[in-house]
Length: 416
Image (cartoon, rainbow, N blue to C red; front, side, top):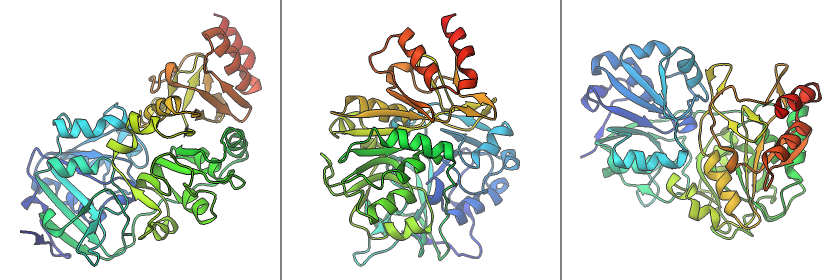
């Protein structure tokens, strides 16, 4: 039997026990009234754990660690404040591993909080803005509490839900969280032009999150029949689909469909996604699966990094001692692009940050992606295609795309 929660006052301690692990949809998919109530009622519940994805809201704050243990696969968004305060524990795993960790109980999920849309004319509820690792959590959670938000877009996906799937429901009518794109810099745009030159018509794209992937999308207006198979998509994909640049007409799987795990963008993206038959939400099990990726011809994986060393090792997690990134799905997609017929694995980043080189002799953080999985490294100064190169050749190519102010020093360190 499904219980309806009173909007003005509801007690989550009825559903959440001390010692539980609670998970919810990340970024714009966060059920904000539920997460805010959870933090407000934390003392009543007792100590519990929260598994966070990318956080777009301020619902979870450092002072809440008095009763809450925060865990996340990364430090993106407002998670950074938790990490900087020393109250975020990081799970350093490939994104593709999350479903198995949830199913096997290594990452136990007791309570799942959802934002859903619906019901439609057939009584089906949509998971709206996120599928990804929510599906295995649905299988294993003891309790599922859903916010049914009238303003959440009804998005097609591999799974829909019926009312009896929820233990408790909160009815709301509120604007969905948004994430606006930042303005691109001339450096971002130069990098984007280099990347766009490596993308063929008919290619299928995966894009990471950030300014450079957004700038790449802005550089593709002259391309034709592009496809998308990506862990996340934003406003840029919606714009290119509206203009016919992304048609998915030449994809070798899921032809005609843009496939994504989570939507992270503005209200423009949400309106575009609502009942759009050309958009399909899928689980992490599918989107990141190596066999699926290898079946996509001309698969181009575009991801960024904090720094890359002279041999191609990638740090995408830590900058200046602060945890702000993630291992994430970059490794999964880079390997997938390497296995794809005509695929292109790309890491793109500016050559400098705050007068420091981001091409380095030695990483200042962990190896998020090993050098054996990289292909092309792109900065505003060019492209270093490391595929098939030995270490000495790699060093020379990486020095060539570093900022000129640092090339001599990097060359010396490379010889050492």
